[in-house]
Image 1 (cartoon, rainbow over the protein chains, first blue to last red):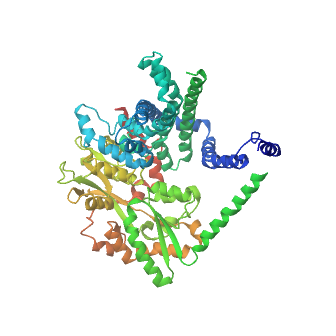
Image 2: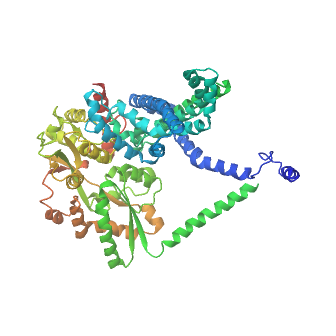
Image 3: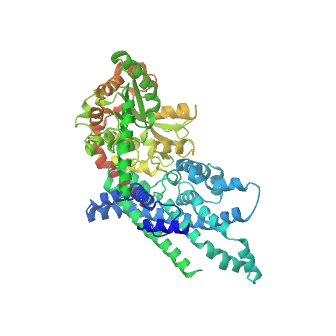
Length: 288
Length: 341
């Protein structure tokens, strides 16, 4: 058996096949991976950058630094940041409850978490605005306290929190499932307080998954269009998100202007994700 | 290398599949009509009528496929290669984009058919809630302090550009052609707009479901639909003293029909829109028929209103778009001023 495997590995001493592998096919899978990434990601992004590169620097700067556009960056990134942060806390909580406790209806709640993935975002937007408008169930009660959600920046945060909900839950859940309760018990029996156990045992193990979920929720929120436009009111300088401005540019057949703003969003999102990944790498190195 | 060979195999398979699909279409002819949202019901009925007509005159079976969406995004789809035989969009600016951005149609496309290539027209009216509680009678009621106005964003909605221009044209008439006064009028109007939905659908939702606003500026045909479908007796249509003649034009997409060999049937499809039968269907679906004789049959449905055209008042769509709606145009300036208040 071993001899046969060795013979096989000698015969196929190529890049990527150095190790003894039960399942062959590095060339094929890598080829398809590159093809797939190329068609689905690199070519569209390349096209975006190409369109942008056709502009002169002045044109580009004028398109991306208009006060109306800058106001939309602040809203889009700010609301995405808040939304993802809310999801970080409550997503972790939901994952914890779903993994650690047994209760009736658990499966239903587990399935419901994925709903924001499945529901068309326009439907979500209309549902949210129906609830949160001053005529809606939630909205009319909040209005008593002087809180307006629909057609304000708060409404944007609500929509972006909604669509980002599954990410943290679904990234944390499997990690938590693998984290045996014995470790918590060991920690407790060695004299650690509950808070210490959470802080020194559970959180470090979850941190990479939490950060991944956070990054995904954030990235998803930055690009969200469908649900937000129904609840935000889309007033320029106040509740207008950047993706809407891109649509507005395309509507006047200003493809370059649309591509320029798209590029800014792409670069900003990339940098932020890089930072989050950097933090993740750093924490795992430190072995927290 | 091995996987290069495999790639070649895949590459060889793809066109073979495409050819197979093409061969199926030989028996009969099929057209793709790329249109905008509210024409859905009208074209559903018209396509049946045309299929019958075409079978009778040319002896050919024709199936018409429909595509509906926002007028601007539909135009962009055709520019980007959607295989439309004919387009029937909301405004000439979007149709003209097929010429400017992709050279799909000739320069003189709008003079090829009667009535500026608009077999049916509409106008902009005001939709108010039952009993007209704010007593809105004309455009100048829309700039009152106690009135909230719902309209989609003209930057993202072709239909909303008609709304804006209708108000501007009214003000020009009212103030003897003074552009500055028209600018102030439209500024005041938009200061009363609490929400700018990107499209007409969303704006209808805001007015009807959210019950936001006192008046909804809408195309006449869509206002009729709202009154009929969204709640009988819940809304009333107020026809202003002056409004704009909204012309949703149609054209054959020359490059596509010549490549596909469907020019005859595509032209027949558009010509038949001017027939008595089609004109009556348009009237039934709340569009104003362009044929005056047929329009007279619907006189009780469509109140007489003084209409002005976009060419006479604004010098055509391209000019209107540039001055009012493009970046840095009047609309941007108006909203910037409102935001700074």
